Amino acid sequence: MTSRFSTLQNRDARPQRAAEPMPVAHHPVVIPTNRKALTAKPEAAPAKNANKVLDARVRIHRLLLEEINLVALERLPKDEMRRQVFDFVSEKTKQERMAINTVELDALVDDIVDEMVGLGPLEPLLKDPDINDILINGHQNCFVEKKGKLQPVHIPFKDEAHLLRIVNKIVAAVGRRVDESQPMVDARMLDGSRFNAAIRPVAVDGPLVSIRKFSKNKLGLHKLVEFGAITQNMAEVLAAAVHARKTTIISGGTGTGKTTMLNALSAFIPEDERLITIEDAAELQLQQPHVARMETRPANIEGNGELKQRDLVKNALRMRPDRVILGECRGEEAFDMLQAMNTGHEGSMATIHANTPRDAISRLEQMLGMTGMPMTVQSIRSQIASALDLIVQLTRLSDGKRKVTSVAEVTGMEGDVIQMQEIFRFVRTGMDADGKILGHYEATGIRPRFLEDLRAMGIEFPGRYFEPGRPQE
Image (cartoon, rainbow, N blue to C red; front, side, top):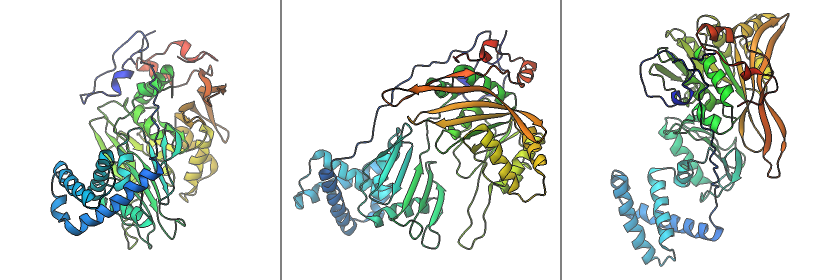
């Protein structure tokens, strides 16, 4: 058996180059599987020290506003600004006889600089690479997510007005607004992080803020194998299917890693294809040289100018795409997306919120019904069955781990029912004393129909990849 699919590890972080045929290899590629434990946890400062530093910061900041030309100060390079702020703060702490040590003084200076040019108390969390989400439920109730687990954290907001100032600073920087007449906002921060906020009167107990941080270190498919989110065999089959233009839906709940998986699989799209991405907040980090990115736009204060995903999908089809990548399919744009998949744009990809592959199909049916088009149930299901090839199901387990729990192939229609067959699945076997989910991946024994198309391209997989009940490598 020969396999042309032998570049899994390297294509995740490949340099920009012209497209070239996939090289022939006689053995499955070896992907490193050593896992590194990430053990860092957020630690709240002791309440006494936190309050002392917070009170000092407020007093020093007030003096800074009164005595320093902030406009001139903010024009300085950040290092020079920090030096001048440090000199000012050192002098004032001596005059005020504030009992703070050198570490607290440095932290105070950093806080004041962050307040002036950054996002105040949020800056340390945004800089922490281990934090994925920042969730704020009023200025005194804050959480972060690390390794799939929510943990409380102390963020030293002085009061609700302080938090509201930070929210307004974020939305103003990206040309959005939030106030009593428009109390909810969804935006992409300057660093690419996804930001959502709701304020009074919608938020009863004070501003609600959710930040999904933008990851600068894109996880490739080999890294997902290393972390145990998928096996090497499954990764090779999926990557080859994407390369061979098999239309793929990534399904999963909130925070299961759908965008990460979409990024990882998209690395195997040939570089000579034109890709168009459509998202609410641009998060995808495609590495191909020919990528056109589009992002939705909310209505302005007069209620005009809104650009929905459906508008962008329609426009994308006039831009000569080879594939359309839809960041999240959740409404009437599903109709236009399926039309594209059925009319020469095979290999397109999208994510969808659903708990199982069958639920993903049901969600698509509901979305097609939202268009108001006069279509029968059989017509809707026929479009879905002819457009889709693969559904990759992601799940966040109770121990915080994110895993591919099922890979299913859509095989067609039988009567009024869309037929699917599961190819791989994750089998849970129990839980250890630490609450870690135990289990293994196995093949169902069904060989996917698209293997014939792969074989025509010179890509073959050993039969052991699909042996029933065999734990996957």
